[in-house]
Image 1 (cartoon, rainbow, N blue to C red):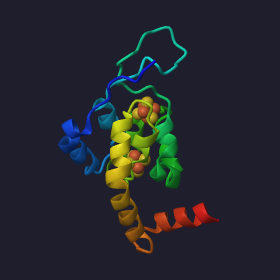
Image 2 (cartoon, rainbow, N blue to C red):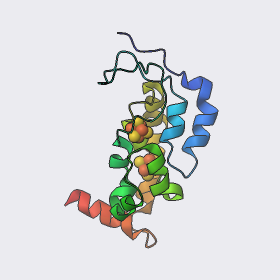
Image 3 (tube, rainbow, N blue to C red):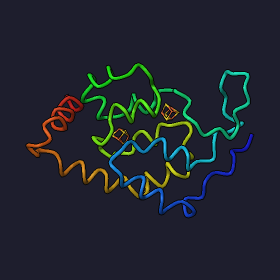
Image 4 (cartoon, protein in one colour):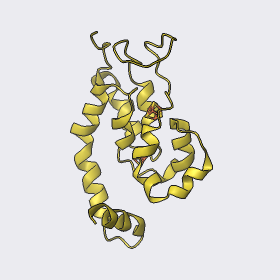
Length: 148
Ligand code: SF4
Ligand code: SF4
């Protein structure tokens, strides 16, 4: 089955950049800018949710978030695994890395491609600048663990 017609990033670029420039988990807003659940995707439920843009509660965004990885105790704030949970756990401490967008099944590929092609170089360079910053000991620890 063909993919739904996905969001043309040119139509939402301004608001998408505002979302990506805000220090808050971006995945829910990117979901809402997307075209919704594709009829060609499989999900073992009876309900027809084609076009449905809401959170599926898959927890991918919570699992991938580097901030949650660095501060796992924050998971104790909630047992939910939704974008709302991610917002509660991370809030304004978001690293703006974009990883949650890339793993969300409800965000259009067009938006993911935009994030990878237009934003990732800036994200990597911003995170790299924080390495060695005494105010960012958690990031150093995270990198040491990642390469060990
Ligand atoms: S995965 Fe990255 S962009 Fe998403 S909430 Fe976590 S730190 Fe923020
Ligand atoms: S990755 Fe899963 S849990 Fe997170 S916003 Fe997308 S559908 Fe919801």
